[in-house]
Length: 207
Picture 1: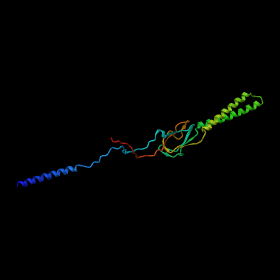
Picture 2: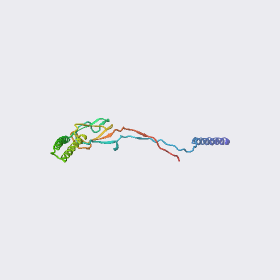
Picture 3: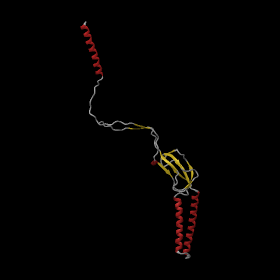
Picture 4: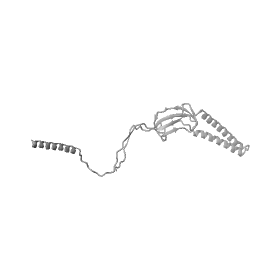
């Protein structure tokens, strides 16, 4: 009987000890040792938003002459293509009057110069008289030429879009009389909308 009990106790110890060893074995894993190497880790950035034009992407449109706004073909927020009509700029009443006065003055000075030439031939006028009349005529011609070159008397001058873009602001209204160089409208270059932008990169060096 004693032998039987002793054998049973030994058998129980063996079973319990074997079970504990099995549990310990389950907790182990194979590990591979390797020297560290320098490399890169991908970096992902996702951004959402709308494109906003920078100051370098905007342009203020103007014309270097006096005039009047005859027509405006766009509104704020409108998109346009290069060459599209934006605004019709015509001669102001004051510019028309100034040009007519310049033409009248030129006609008068030319007539005086011709008369002085004739009187000089008849020895009824001096050379100084002729030279003075010639200078007056030359000044009148210069005034008319200047008004014509700057376009003050143009009935219509179309402001065209210099690039593809959008109208950011309009500084004038139809019928306004504008001086040379005054801002007419602000134009922004068209920028494509990027709802999502991804950038990959980054570097990690294990120590």
